[in-house]
Length: 117
Image 1 (cartoon, helix red, strand yellow):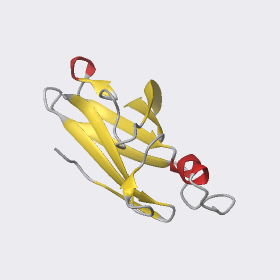
Image 2: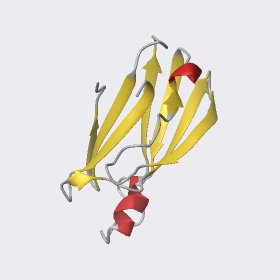
Image 3: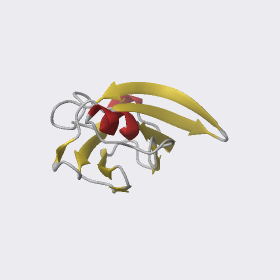
Image 4: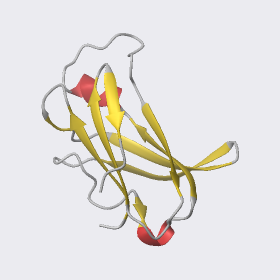
């Protein structure tokens, strides 16, 4: 799969995070534009890239992951407001012909993100 993809792993339950809502934005200066919304499947992945290879341009993008909603659906008691309700990951794409994969490892109290393959 080429383009911009993601994968979410739930470290609290030791499994892929399904049904996590994601929004993708493109930043132009101080303005962000919503490009796509998606939800992860049972493997914690999207069925198609959140940004298709043909639509990729160099620039700044933001993935917004709704992890608070995910953990609430799992029955985890979160504080109000939740410590981590939405996780924002801003990335730069400098080579629009390359594949970008952004894995996210989550718990209600922390997360880790990196550029995968």
